[in-house]
Image 1 (cartoon, rainbow, N blue to C red):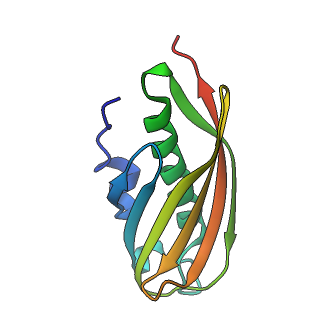
Image 2 (cartoon, one colour; image 1 turned 135 degrees about the horizontal axis):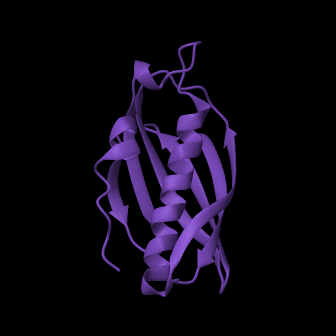
Length: 129
């Protein structure tokens, strides 16, 4: 499967950089900035959810390759530490990859390797139409 262009749209809006993207591991980094804060000046939880979903979907798509496409059907993300600024890194890895579904986990850490959020996404594998 050819990697889709992941430099525009929502990815660009969030400022995400793909450090690694394979069927077994996806690494995404971004800088926390005021436009991504919630009203109390910390990283908005929706950003964490979006990055978790993005990492899982990219990895799941690369694994499924030409056998179909994936869509997220469940995203459960926990916010563990408030972050006001700095660089964050998300690492996504598969937990289960089956015929009809995949489960991916994603851990987000700060520059000091402290866990700030973690999540998991269940993907539905869709056959080509």
